[in-house]
Structure formats: C-alpha cells, structure tokens
Image (tube, rainbow, N blue to C red; front, side, top):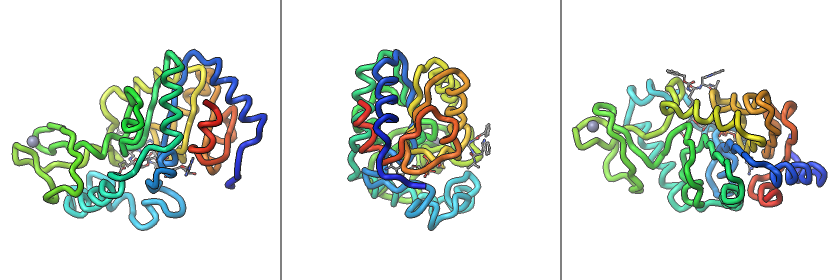
Length: 245
Ligand code: BJW
Ligand code: ZN
C-alpha cells in the first residue's frame, strides 16, 4: 500500500536515532534513484515488466546471446548517462560527513552515489560503468555511451561482459562479509528504496535487527520486512531522507 508522507512522530523518532548514532549503515536499492529518472526493477514501469530476468541478467543469457544482453546494458547506460543524483543521494553524503562510523552498501550499479560525492561504497551487485573480460578476468572502467562496438572486447581479444552481478553469481569476494560486519557494528540501519527480495543483500535487514540496530525503512511501498523494522517511513526517498538529516 502506498502512502503520501510519514507521520510526524515516526519522523521525529528516526531523526533522534540518527542524531545520536555513533555508527550508521545504509543499504540502498533502485528506489533511491527513481527520482533521478532511473527505472526500478520490479513494479509498474520497472525494468522486469518488459524483460524477463532470466533472458537478460543471468550468465546463461549472456552465454546464449551476448549481443542481446549487451544491447540492453548499452541502452540502460544511455539512459543513465544524463541522470543526476537526487536529494536522497546528497543527504547520505551529509550523514557520511557527520557520523564517524558510516558504511554505505548499495545494490545499485548506476554510479549515482559516486557522482553525489559518497566515499567508499560497497557495491554488492557491481558497477554498470565497469567491464570485465570473460577470458583473462581484467576489469576496467568504461563510461563511453554508446559503446562503439557491441559486444565489446578486451585487449586480450576475449569477450567483455558488464561488471555487474547476475542471478546465480557470487557477490564480489569478501564484500558481503564486510557489509555484515558494518551492519553488526551499526546502531542504526537505514534501508532505502529496496524491495528486499534479492538475497543475500536483503538478509542484511534482519541481520541488523538481530544484532540490535534500530532499523529504519524508507520506501514508497511495504516490503517483506516492513513489519519487523523499528520505523517504516512511507514516501519518496528524495523527500523523506532530507527531513531526517
Ligand atoms: C522507492 C521509490 C522512491 C520506488 N523512494 N522507494 C535466498 C532465497 C531465495 C533466493 C535466493 C536466496 N539467496 C540467493 C538467492 C538467489 C538470488 C535471489 O535473491 N533470488 C530471488 C529474487 C528469488 N540471488 C542471487 O542469485 C545472488 N547471488 C547469489 O546468491 O550467489 C550465491 C552463489 C555463491 C557462490 C557461488 C555461486 C553463487 C545475486 C543477485 C544479483 C542480483 N542482480 C540484479 C541485477 C544487477 C545488474 C543489473 O542492474 O542489471 O541486481 S537483479 C536486481 O535486483 C538488481 C538489484 O540490485 C536487485 C534488487 O532490487 P532492488 O534494488 O530492491 O529494486 P526493486 O526494483 O526490486 O525495488 C525498488 C524498491 O524501491 C521498491 O520497494 C519500491 O517500492 C521502492 N521505490 N520508488 C523510495 N522514490
Ligand atoms: Zn582479457
């Protein structure tokens, strides 16, 4: 169920927790970039409405038809290139400056946290602006839009793939451990704009709760964890988050 704006007492509680937290972990998902014009995955207007994940976001799909997969990623890069960080991305930069032990964990591949000025970010699902060689394993940044030739290749001649994590693939080595550690250490976890359906990332929410953190969810809709979080703030991240900072 969608709602317009959070209750004032909920906002006040969340504001107090953040004002007094010595450590904060933040988990973001596609919803934080929605107000930058970036489509989410699930729901009305989401990327999966017209495309089946198994046709485009799996290693099997890439092995079957690398050009088709690359055309989809190329078109997403074209749409992302002019997108600007929004007030929610910027509010997280302010929190990072204010809170000594701060960890930003994102499922997003869009690079908008970097462009807003966030420091180190644990990019659990990789980065759409990086490519990786399927033969020699080299990986490199490439912001060219459009890519001059699809599918792109590595200097070694091997086929290159998007530097993202597809279904059935492991997350970047050690990153989930680092995220779990940050969440265990956090007095507050902010979960922003994620449907919390994709694992292992979604598991960070109950992980934080069991480790004793106050969990604040910011989302336009309910998620599977809305009933267990300490404070569920309904509304667009770009409007709600600046009210907390
Ligand atoms: C707003 C808003 C606004 C809108 N303001 N809010 C346990 C149980 C079941 C399955 C599994 C499990 N563990 C693992 C699995 C399998 C699988 C999985 O989770 N499947 C489930 C979907 C069933 N997971 C994996 O395969 C992962 N790998 C893995 O587990 O490896 C194990 C392994 C170990 C060793 C060897 C081999 C394997 C990998 C997952 C990779 C996910 N990849 C994608 C694509 C990335 C590349 C790309 O961009 O193309 O990542 S899928 C897609 O979903 C993308 C996202 O990061 C991810 C999460 O989506 P997110 O961010 O939550 O977006 P949405 O669209 O779902 O939600 C948006 C939310 O925003 C909504 O709630 C809106 O309401 C809200 N919103 N506007 C605030 N303005
Ligand atoms: Zn190579």
